[in-house]
Amino acid sequence: MRIGILGLGRIGAFHAETLSGLDAVESLVVTDPFADAAKAAAERFGAEVVDSPEALLAAGVDGIVVAAATDAHPALILAGVEAGIPVFCEKPVAKTMSEGVGVLKAVRGSDVPIQIGYNRRFDTGFVNARAAVRSGELGTLHTVRSTTLDPAPPPAAYIAASGGIFRDCSVHDFDIIRWVTGREVTEVYAVGGNRGADFIKEAGDADTTGAILTLDDGTIAVVSNSRHNARGYDVRMEIHGFTDSIAVGLEDKLPLRSVEPGVTFPAGTPHDFFMDRFTAAYRAELTAFTEVVAGTRPSPCTIEDALEAGWIAEACTLSLHEHRPVTIEEVRQA
Image 1: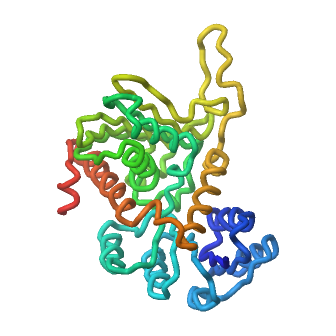
Image 2: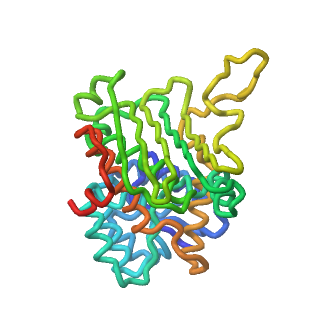
Image 3: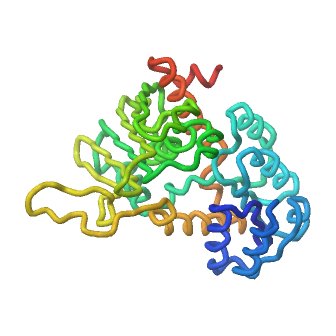
């Protein structure tokens, strides 16, 4: 099949590399406002370069991958749907929830599939965790812990436009908690602080946060996030039930060291970047999209899924600023 890529920044170029290695993908068509980025992709992957999204949609592509700036996501999703072309779009659906809801309303009733990029759903550890929960082997759940710790903050310009750590970073934890447990979040309480880069505080954001999520069956989920984790990129999940407990990310490249005598685990070189930690997951995610394009599977992460994670991020942001518990229904109705 022939896949179009809109946007060739860091993640777009990474997706181009991944797609070029998939057996199902015969050719790539790419476009980016920066001609040098498009030219580089053409030279590396033998891609065809076009000068606009409109030209790409008219180039006979079977599916499109939207990796452009967040502001462009709504228009590009809708353009793909209007052209009848299956869409993969990196999260978020839109910069604001109201815009995201607008996209959902606009595509409702369309049979053109849309997949939103939440890559943890394709990581083998999280897939196995979901299977363990759904099979009942853990028994009734009582506690979930989800962690995302970045080795260093992104640039100041990125932070200023990110919408805040809950919308930009924690939202991955929120999505994977919903996906693994099969439960919905009903209420949150969030805290945060600034112990590092001044530009994060100046942007009105926190660099380290914690959130308590209450799920609809009474399970408690604890989410921990930070922009400062010098040992590496740390993504983990613990799931505790009345019968058994399991962990995702408990492997030799875990960026943590034990101070217990005689313990050498973890012994590997720590993960230092999200592309390192989730290389295989990104490949599985885009492989899934080729199956969506081929019509052999439904979207594994819909706009509705993405918006549910977004509402949790909105609730946590409000909770942090107002120092109080916030229900999901409160922000959904706001």
